Length: 431
Ligand SMILES: Cc1cc2nc3c(=O)[nH]c(=O)nc-3n(C[C@H](O)[C@H](O)[C@H](O)COP(=O)(O)OP(=O)(O)OC[C@H]3O[C@@H](n4cnc5c(N)ncnc54)[C@H](O)[C@@H]3O)c2cc1C
Image (tube, protein in one colour):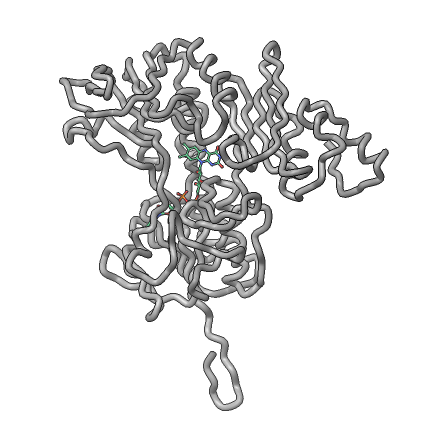
């Protein structure tokens, strides 16, 4: 604010946003929707418009074109009056001077800063330099280009890690007459998403497609051998591959906050307004660690929908419109080899002492597990029958007492309309 005699001139704020993806774009939309006309400086390490990492496997599968991965075009940045600094990396922050340091040694001043720098795939160690061109993670559009090109010619592909990213790539390239091998450190696939019984159903489907799965394996080395690589495991097996895809999880991009007083653990710690411990510094998306509303624990919830929701809350607060994030927990919906898989809230038994209701119908490929804290639904793992997932999510998010209908919810046979009519309880959703 500047004062000239009795006239007061409000200075436009400068909002710096690091990260041009789900969280960053949602914040931009929220800022402008709230009527904020401040300057928006958008910094992105990648030199391209925003695209969705979620769509990369569809591109690799040939189901969409490369251009379809982009969420916005040049027009978006014009309409929302955003100044782009693309191909520039934020390397440090000086909260006292309110400056963001960039990799070209320039500094950006800010009034509000949003760190929405997401996460990077964890690379594999022990890869010989000559072998690197045959090895890829999948996070960025550049990774997608590399895998898309390599899968065209590859006859043998080795996947390290059996999480959602590996399985989504397998889904993308299945049926293209390639030998596929999964190398898994633990003793089940999808260990971050589900229990061993649910995982066994998916495992059986993968093996029925001729995919070899090696459990309890560590990769000792990857070396180049002519036009291919050799993957050496701790069981002394040597797996030949034209392409190695590494899916060993992600880690938040925190480098710019190291050596600052911004508090972090696995991610940057934020409250329910997406504020860090510094009043004018916010964080959202895969880089942020907020409160899981089911467990009450601080956690990085690395999903697209969470990044969008957190970015929106940050944008509103940056515009001076107080907003709080509600119902923040893990959730995922996917299809693996024609089996629909939904996990909401808690979906693994080791996550706590909860009552578990199961329903298994092998003939129809149905496996459902509900996790209850007393009479409150706190999690669900649904395979095969997922048509009521939206209602179950609603129950979990709103901590509804489901005790009268818990068995029907487990089997998926609950008629929500009848309950609503009979109970006159309008807090219940209709299926
Ligand atoms: C193959 C794949 C499939 C997925 N499928 C699903 C799914 O089915 N459902 C789901 O919910 N989620 C899925 N995800 C996860 C989802 O993509 C992420 O949760 C989401 O992209 C997070 O968004 P974000 O805005 O936090 O960060 P990101 O999308 O990671 O973007 C980070 C941005 O920050 C920039 N950046 C990073 N470091 C710097 C720096 N130092 N300086 C400047 N800019 C920087 C990057 O260039 C980028 O623009 C999937 C991810 C992958 C890779």
